[in-house]
Structure formats: structure tokens, C-alpha cells
Length: 224
Image 1 (cartoon, rainbow, N blue to C red):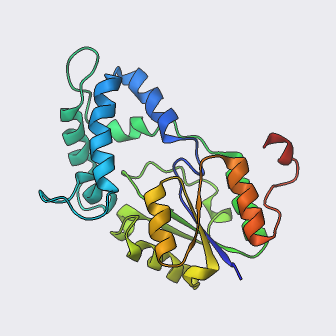
Image 2: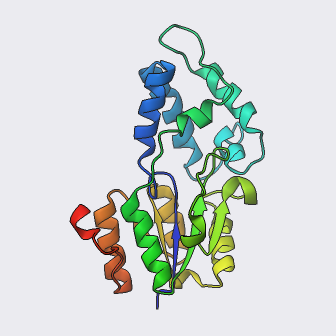
């Protein structure tokens, strides 16, 4: 019997990273083509199985909280270029990058319904600094696992085990919702039921199918 929900934050409980990044690129006048080339290489390597011969990707260290945010921001800013030809301002770069995240009410409502139904809920998020709006989290989550605070990151098995331990549940008793396929693959490998998120209405429908419970708050169905 399914008894718990492990769920990602950015791009699942919030609007997409792509939307937030697009706002930041425009505001900071970042060269978008160059940005995509730089980030594609970094992110692809960061979520590839194994470790590259020249050492871990800096994203790994950032997400585990092993390096200061400003150190990563300075390194990333040095690799980027603005439309004016120089690097962007490093200090606060990640805060500006994620400033466009906005809550997706349907998904947050799903979690409120899950807790009302007696299910355990745990946030499992890879952090690029502390740019979370934590207002209302006490009604959404029984436990919170932020990668930079616990020194582990998705898709490492140990972060899933840690989250399960906080809920007191086994992998087969929980569903994990995330928008990154590599994280879903890793979660399924240890027995979690994975739901690859791309659209709120599809994710909520799949959660209702899996749990056999209604996860739409009253009045929300018409918005989906």
C-alpha cells in the first residue's frame, strides 16, 4: 500500500526552470546561445552516471553544499557573456536566475490533499543555494530534504534513503515525483514508484490512479 510522497521543488511545485531562466537572461542581457552551450555541458555531465576522469562536475559540489554559492557564481559568471561582451555580475547570480520561480497552485494543492488523506510527504530538492520561499511549507511537508543542507544530492541513492527514513517508510510504499528523468530512474532502481512530471494535470491524474484518492482541491478541477 502506498503511504507517502517524495517530491521535487523547482519545476514541479513551481513554474519551470526554463521560464525563470528566460526572465533572468533578458534582465541581465545574457547571450542566450552561449548560455545554453555552457549549461548544456555542465548539466548533462552532472546527471550522467559515473564521474568524469577530470573530477566531479562543480554542480555536484554546489548541490551538496561543499562549496560556497558565491564561488560557484563567480566560476559560472566567468564562463558566461552578456550581449555587451563582458561577464554578468557574479554576486547574486543564482538568486536572480531563480527569481522567476512561482508556485504552481494545483501541485501544491495536491500535496495539501495528500496530507489531509494521511499520507506522509517529503520535499527532496537539489539546491543551488537557499533560494526557496518556505512560506506555507508546514502544511505541505512532514519532512524537508534540501541537498545542500544534508550533503547529498539526487540521483544518489543515499538521499532517497535519508528521505524515506524521515518518513519511516520503505521505498515500495512511496511515490517520487520529479521533472528530471535521471532522478526518476535512480528512484525506481531502489523500489520507489516514479512519476516523471511534465504537466500538472497529467501528474495529478497519475497520482490519483496510483493512490486511488482525489488530489484536486475543491474548485481546482476546472483549472486543470
